Image (cartoon, rainbow, N blue to C red; front, side, top):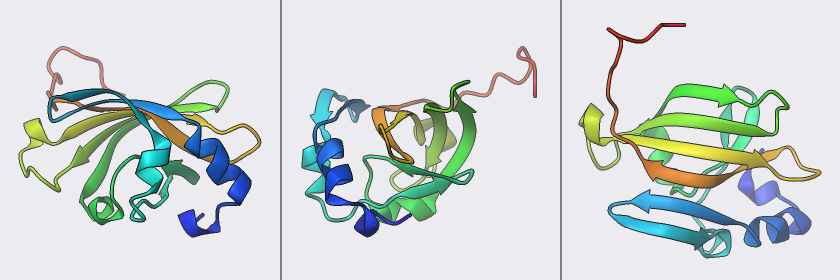
Length: 128
């Protein structure tokens, strides 16, 4: 799915949403309406599902999905991401996104997007 293919009805639903952020020490709710004004957002395909994050399309090539956790009902997803757009340092390039599926749509939209320090805990935690 491409952002340009979204219906006007879907765009109107997205505009009503807010997302929580902690990015570069700026925090608080943001409106999706302001993000949609960028004209540079694009939908990501993650494990066969369409996900919209509040990031510029130019960052997509720098994203690595580290972990994906789908909710039992399939209506939410938690993503652990590495974005090397601004930092090529594993510790400083982590992000956490929580996305919910829009009603009557097959699109997941971020409701939380936070910086996350990538910390490896392999010694003490069980692996999949």
